[in-house]
Picture 1: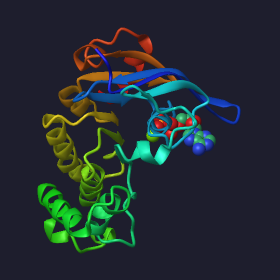
Picture 2: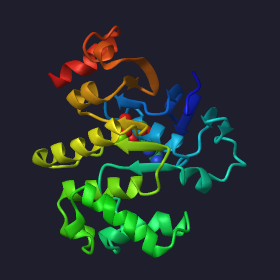
Picture 3: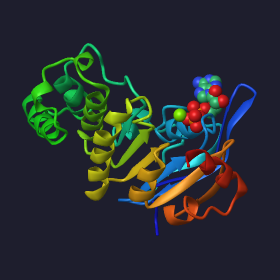
Picture 4: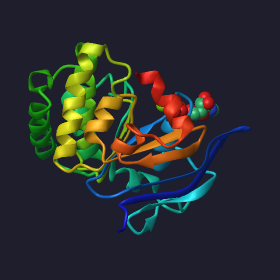
Length: 243
Ligand code: ADP
Ligand code: MG
């Protein structure tokens, strides 16, 4: 089976510190993969490398048949095929929610404003933010901001959605509304790679879980194996903190 996104042997160092030490990941269309691991294990760096936000030192990244890690590749063109949501505060503060959602469609994909806004209003309805479309992000709760960030990320119909601990900066009572939205995207067939500390959510929604420790994938497999019956001592030690 051919993966939509496939990375092999990814290495990344910051100065002397090697943060990714030969990581392989693959993601099939419609697959939801959860990336788990302690803080500092390299999850965000891996997502940023796959997203072409960070250059890699070694390895290869394929999107379909194309080697997107080739330095001659236009990273902006590739990133236009991805959507990403980060921990928090990644909406443009000076733009309304609506303009945040339409920006990439208008600027990157050159969609006319009226069409982009039509589509954005539909998305904002879906994420329950229609009445906040004209407000600035600072008027919204953290959960609403993350739902707006998700609407923005999916506005361009990305082939892969990267989610980096999108609920970890939220007050606990706001986590559920954001996870429910991610679950509905997964149910509709989105292809998602998400770093998360929400183990119950990973167990319910992910098709596969990948445990990263000190820059290597220690264990991967279906949630029922990795989360419920981990083979590796390091996975067990990590998971014991969540019970
Ligand atoms: P995680 O997301 O799993 O918490 P990160 O990928 O953020 O892990 O970080 C992995 C390691 O890389 C950490 O030690 C972090 O300090 C380091 N790191 C991440 N980004 C940078 C950077 N831009 N410059 C230097 N070190 C970094
Ligand atoms: Mg991180």
